[in-house]
Amino acid sequence: MEKYWIIGSSSGIGRELAKKLDAKGYNLILSSRNEEGLNELNKSLINNHEVVPLDLSNKDQCFSVSKDIISKEMDSLNIIYMSATYSPDDSSDYENVINVNILGLLHILSITKEFIKNTNDVSQLIICSSLVAYKGLPYSQPYSMTKAALYNLASSLHIELKNVVDVKVITPGFVKTPLTDKNNFPMPLIISANAAARIIAKGMNSNKFEISFPLPMYLIMKGLQTLPNFMSNYISSLVKKGTDKI
Ligand SMILES: NC(=O)c1ccc[n+]([C@@H]2O[C@H](COP(=O)([O-])OP(=O)(O)OC[C@H]3O[C@@H](n4cnc5c(N)ncnc54)[C@H](OP(=O)(O)O)[C@@H]3O)[C@@H](O)[C@H]2O)c1
Image (cartoon, rainbow, N blue to C red; front, side):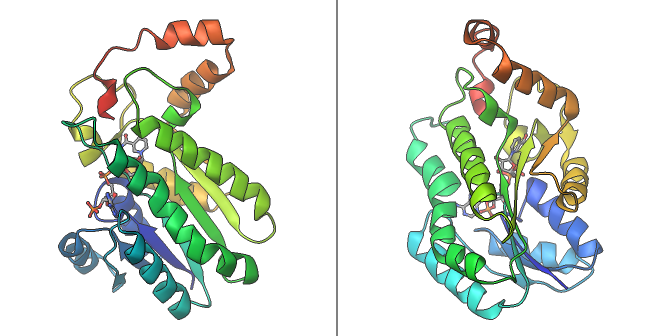
């Protein structure tokens, strides 16, 4: 049975996805900083899984945990990268956002990519971006730029690793999680983390590169991306301050 390493499984979408994959009988490696939260999640699941604490902002830890995991899981590893960080009260905390959202994954890939390339045993690499990756909206930096970077990374790996591993990107709209619970503005078409996980679990079994939801939000953001710049910039300029808290 395949094994999924879910990085960012202590809360929100990653936690719900862990529940779905557990119910399908997959073996899991549960990672994030909150070891207690991961153990508590593990106890609530049907099967017993491995808990591997990991702080993505710690480069040495990213290296050592990745080496350890690929040395033990030679025969069936899939990686799902779900993590995000955001500092709602301190927008000057851009360094941590970039460390966790971008560098954390690059550190992990620097160890696992060769393994992925040289083995038939990793079948999926799934990277969580966001629909904000499609268009730079006002007040949403630096989080949004990291999501755009992850989309770009996933597209490029999808081509480079074709026939070796199935690389997918997840682009959610608003999902109710601790990340968005901090938001104090209307979040159109918001869905539950359970619904998001259900869509992701289904999309993982499809041959699509992108798992995007909800459809109306996808169409709006895709529309913004494809309109001429003067039109999409005008529409985007109507976004009110406060949306930096996503
Ligand atoms: N919610 C939305 O509306 C929405 C929309 C678009 C995209 N997304 C994306 O969906 C993914 C999941 O978000 P969510 O809404 O479920 O957020 P969440 O509930 O805040 O979960 C974020 C996860 O990332 C982990 N994490 C944060 N910093 C970490 C670090 N330094 N090292 C390791 N793990 C870390 C957290 O665990 P610990 O605190 O235990 O470390 C947690 O498990 C993110 O990539 C987010 O950008 C969410």
